[in-house]
Image (cartoon, rainbow, N blue to C red; front, side):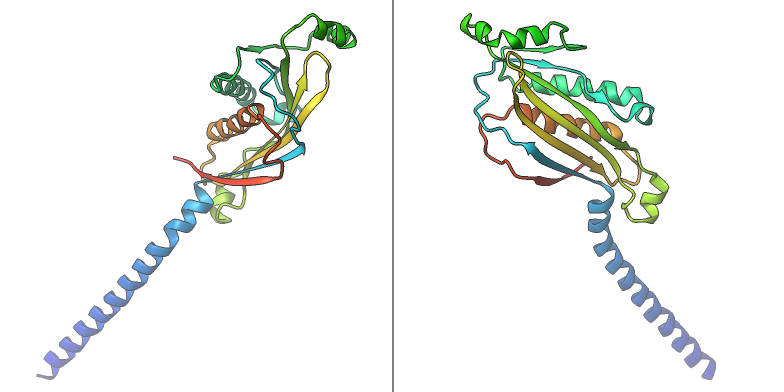
Length: 222
């Protein structure tokens, strides 16, 4: 009889412990995923208008997209630079706002002479053309192991500075700084590149001077 009572008590103790453990696990399971999703799977984008677009750009029907100058040199893989330039070109074309979007490897040596005679060109009725140029200001792929330990704080970062200019006059029409941070445990650099290119195309597609302040957005990747 005594042994039976002890067995029952032990069984009850095990049951209570199991229930407590199960509740605890469910509590963690319910609270952790949202935090991991935000900190590990999020793409954070910040853009700051250094020189806001102050006029309507709808008069520009042609765009000349130039390769970004790589200030990070060999710190960023050449494949990433190539993908970035290609995505910016393709996503600018996808705006379907321009008659022609061309890619120019290097500035025309005679451009300064063209700028000096801008008034003559304008008089001749040449279509207005927008130049999109800039440089890669910062890049780090981050360290996946440290992102896991630091709960996503060891970010992968890509920063661009983009300038819009009038090709005929050389006048700056707008300038913005774009930063994309990837807090994934496994860095997804191609997705960062696509997001940065989207932001560039959005800036190129500006039509008025609205939304001139800094902005920050969270994009959750697949």
